[in-house]
Structure formats: C-alpha cells, structure tokens
Image (cartoon, rainbow, N blue to C red; front, top):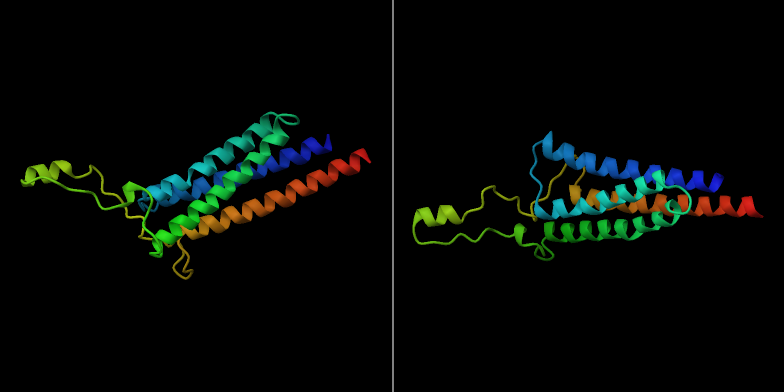
Length: 171
C-alpha cells in the first residue's frame, strides 16, 4: 500500500510539473502575446506526454502505474536535449533543424505571385530568444531545459525513496 502511494505521489508530481511547464508556455503565448517559434512548439511535446504518463500512474496505480513512470525519463532527457538544441540556435552555434525556423522562400516575378507565396502568419525566427525576466539573461528555452533537468533530478530522488520504502516493507 505504501509503495503504491509513493508511486502515486510521483505521478502527481509529474502531472503538476507538466501542467506548470505547459501553463507557462500558454501564459507567455496567450497573455503576454509572445509568438512561439517552431522549436518552442516542439519543446512542448515531451511535457504533454509526461503529463499523460503521470495521469496513467494516478489512474492505474500499482502494476500499470509504477513501471509506466520510467517512461518520463527519456521524455525529460528529450526535453533537455530540445532545449539545448534551441539554445544553440539562439546563440548562433548551429542553424535550426526545422524548416519553419528559416526565412520563408518567397518566389514569383510579379508582386501578386510574391504575396501569394508568403505564409499566412509570420513565423518567429528560432534564433530570436524570449527573455521572461529582464534581470536574468537566460532565454525561455534555457530556463525550460534547466526546469526539465530539475524535474528529472527530483523524479530520480522520489523513485529512489519509493524503492527504499518498498524494501523496508518487505524486509
């Protein structure tokens, strides 16, 4: 019983961490009206899946929940990797791997053809960082990577404590 409760706490933690990450992204986009770039949008996907992993653990405790929690590890590592990739693009270390981050290719000989080939919505370049806190020189992508690393560290500690709790129960 205590082991299932310990795993459920981890599930709740993952849900809260995911909701916070996605909530901040939503707030920046919809309240502050800062357009995300294509890399920003991709960086949200690991958090959506981590949210699902946490919900599975909460709704299906025990056999289905505990082992499913380990799926969050590669997802959080992917989130850290995506943040590192995005930071490298922002710092000019490499070009963005996504075509949506590049300047649009406008073609045509007449003005009407050129206007027709333009995207409907302007895209935000991936090498233009968003700083949420003016006094902190860390972009939103870097902060997201640090947050994912912190969540991963807390997850590992919580998993280790849950494992120790199970050992104490059976020994």
